[in-house]
Image 1: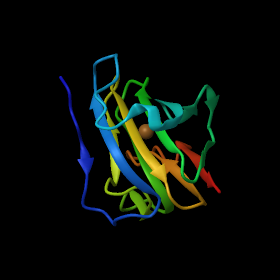
Image 2 (image 1 turned 90 degrees about the vertical axis):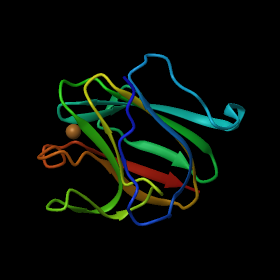
Image 3 (image 1 turned 90 degrees about the horizontal axis):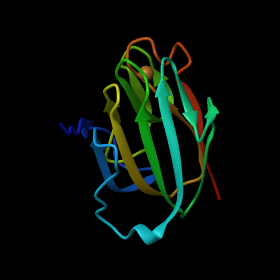
Length: 150
Ligand SMILES: [Cu+2]
């Protein structure tokens, strides 16, 4: 059972050119739609109740460089659904970032045990957040700094 659950309605562009995004329950990742030799950096982000662990470091941060082709591998190690939004200005009523930086995706949703891979090139430096907007999760601390440097 493979699923792909994305909101694509959001505000377009800022940081990323999203090259590929795949959600799968299969332990091995994934079909690549592009040249994997271009990927400069791979970061593994585990989701739990209620935090992200970034390359083994609890609560991040995620550090990227402008121009690098970067792959984020998300793994939901928790027992409940988690998601991933990228941006600034959290809207806790709307359950999203008002300033959503990853085009064309508003978010990525993973059920327990699911994995996803997101490959993109960061275009703009800045300090953003990665956050989970399942009810109460962001407020419980499920967020990390998402920093893109020149
Ligand atoms: Cu969550």
